Image 1 (cartoon, rainbow, N blue to C red):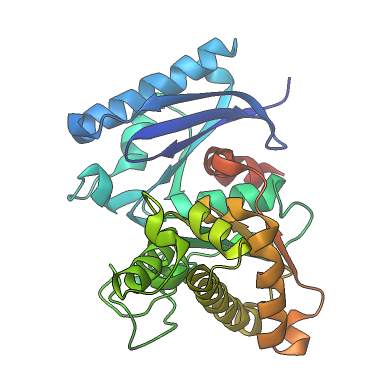
Image 2 (cartoon, rainbow, N blue to C red):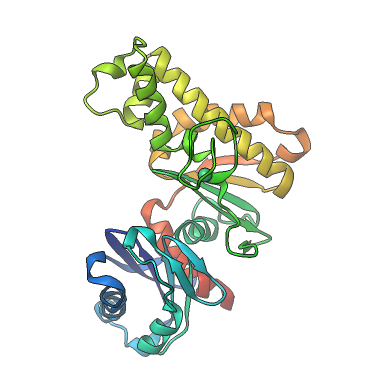
Length: 316
Ligand SMILES: [Zn+2]
């Protein structure tokens, strides 16, 4: 039997754990509640015991696990293995998480942020397989991203590299959670699209969305497909903003492929096809030559697969 790694994708409400082989194939996965209210020690203790449980259920001895990678939703010092802040878990103090986990497990541990591990998962064995230069963009409640160039995940000085959601699209635009205005996230996230639709409804614009109980991106894409003017405008604005960001990323980074994931990407071709057109129209011809724009393939497994890949890919 070849080596096995464990990846953990820690979220605010649940943690996903997966045991993977050296090709990123999942051997066994499990999902457990995070129970963030139990505090730092409680959550770390649960990660420690659930990982051991996973190995045991797969019929492995703990010594057969080569290492554990962990994706975390917040600000980290990746190189030091330290959490600076995980706001949605209520961790506001520094936590030397890598050291704590290595002491508990006695095997190597690596950490990275959730967007980076999801990008790495897709690049390794999802929609980016076989390509060395990939930009992943996740359209969900916010807009996340990860950059893999020459096969390497980029971090930059403080690990902020890949935060494509905070590229400024409209300096006079809507305030963003980050303190700036008009970031990509304020326009092309599910939250941004729903806000723009609700603004049009509040302004008295005629739209079928006014009669929808709760507007989400699914309703917006459906209304756009039926020719609703407001929905078409919101969709166009979201896609144009994303294409503008991708255009800038192309001339700076020259990726071979953009991978679009997250909840909004479930719109599928209704999103990707107009995005390809808007991107082609806006982007310098040499920079866009041969560039693919594709949907993510791994869904919510990308996080733990990429987390395991933090260590598993090293050994190749
Ligand atoms: Zn921002």
